[in-house]
Amino acid sequence: MTVLITGSRGKVAAALIPLLHQHGVAVRAASASPDKLSLPEGVERVVCDLDDPATFPAALAGVESVFLYANPKHIEAFLSEAKAAGVQHIVLLSSSSVLAPDADTNAIAAMHRAVERGLESSGIQSTFLQPGGFAGNALGWAWAIKSTGTVDLPYPETQSSPIHEADIAEAALAVLTRPELRGRAYHLTGPASLSAAEQVAILAEVIGRPLTVNAVSGQAWKESTAEFMPPAIADALLSYFASSDGRPDSVTPVVEELTGHPARTFEDWARENADAFRP
Image (cartoon, rainbow, N blue to C red; front, side, top):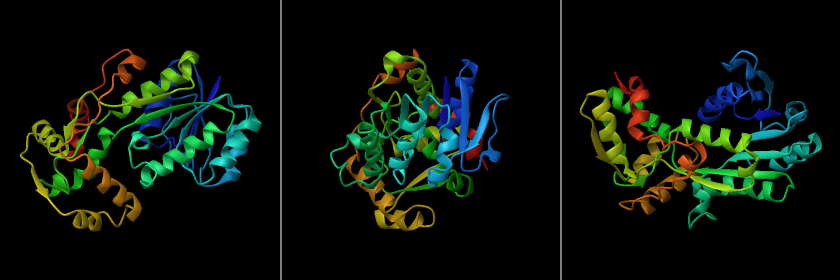
């Protein structure tokens, strides 16, 4: 079996590639810039830019399974080429945002749901991984923590159940290598619901430095993210933050069911990444 991994520079894909390789699975690591990948010896690299359909045929040739990032721009062309190449199974890295009541109007959910719908109508067996917020999203606070020790949050008490990217990768390994797990949707979460302020407090404890949370308006936060975040995505996140303000997030046992071990905690992630937050 050859597995094509799209988005191989991403945190989840980068963790998944060595797991598959260690299990004796032939891996083809794909990226728009494959020369920038750091890969285990023996792992093939290939150009596959999900924004460029011309790169799809060569990347998919001889592939049985695909780990797919959710990019709806050319999903019909990708699935057409996948079908022509004989792909039997696609694992989509989707999002738990598709499960929310505002999924039809939320930009983040709409992007992932568009790809899910494409897969549902493709005729290719598909498995959806629907994680909540990544623990690694906390890296967005790293510069502020290092430089000022203060984190600006529009909703400090918004709750999420942050999931370690390694757990998503191990869940993907399970559904790619165990046929009985295919064809379902899996809502993946970390082991506990935490407020944003609680996550900052955990980081403070781990790095041994007091940190301050500064509550700001949604508009101020949106303006601070404008250089790197499209307005529709910022609005979707603000809507999520508001709907989750003071409300515990869902926690599921799915990581343990798929991997055989409890989901890693946010503190686990923080200790592994502490240097990113130290001056």
